[in-house]
Image (cartoon, rainbow, N blue to C red; front, side):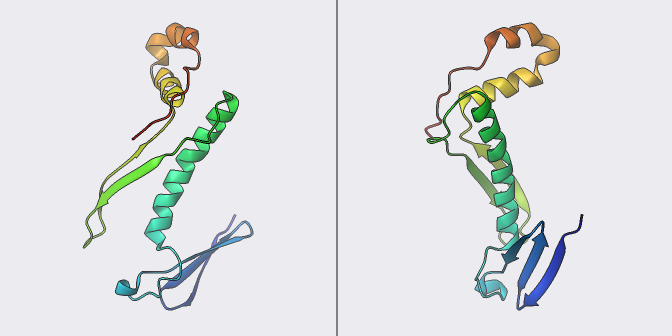
Length: 126
């Protein structure tokens, strides 16, 4: 598989893969035209949507509606160096968190996690 990266002008960069083209641009204060998301913004969006698709699959398999679920990706980065200081995701349904906690603890608590089953879903409020 190949992903083609092109430079259509200015600070714009495009990526074409699997029939889709994604365009990025930089903000005006960085020499761009601000006509598309910045590459780093798309990087963060890809992390958030990747986590989101796991929630969708989990909720589908446990018949939990996703209508009121909102995942929040928070990050802190140095505005001069753009180095990421920290990043975190919140807002996962409790059933998703309980299930994944059990997977992490399976070696020591396999039987208790299996008996627990999916927890009742509650939405994060903050």
